[in-house]
Length: 220
Ligand SMILES: Cc1cc2nc3c(=O)[nH]c(=O)nc-3n(C[C@H](O)[C@H](O)[C@H](O)COP(=O)(O)O)c2cc1C
Image 1 (cartoon, rainbow, N blue to C red):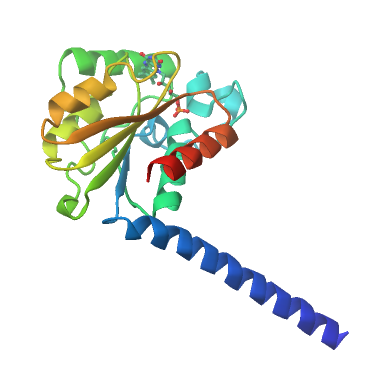
Image 2 (cartoon, rainbow, N blue to C red):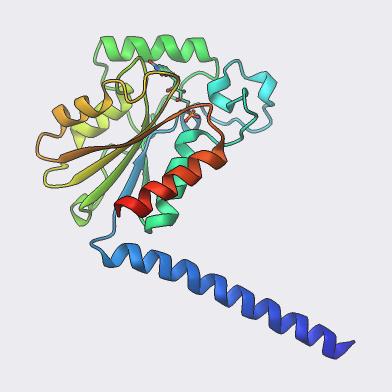
């Protein structure tokens, strides 16, 4: 019995060492092709305060909990985390000081007003510290009113992206990238802005992850 336990323990240690090695080589491979990238995202779900204890039914929008498919993670979160683990990128989340309402309609109305009035939305952290360290930025953002969410606009204006490559990824419910890529080009004129991929907000988490991985493999 003791010998049996020892064998199981040894096999378990061996397997975990193999997994650690594989994940390290993945990241080293990505990093060796240049400086470490950074993934910057704006996720609606991280900007509506706590959703703890809320059931899917309690939220009025399919887009908040992707209720239509029963998916637990937002598309933005799936894209962000897949890029982060696939490239070893640093991470920055754009967050507003005054969170949006959990009520979808109210959020839509507030967002419209902010865009129309070019509101200087207050952010938890306006600037990325040490942005100079990064050559490549993955910007992962949804389409709001066919354009940039106002917090993203405020954030882009506050940081200097000169000389950087910005890959844009997005989520939407029909508008594709909308005006996002063009607007980013306007706000970051000295950066090279490249359209990555835009995903339907109600796509399955699994298929988005697979597609992002495929894109990374083909483009990094
Ligand atoms: C304020 C607001 C405005 C939106 N405007 C649009 C739009 O103009 N076009 C569109 O395709 N989707 C629009 N959407 C849907 C978002 O892009 C959607 O929430 C997102 O794609 C869902 O992805 P997620 O799973 O990352 O939350 C809007 C959503 C919100 C909250």
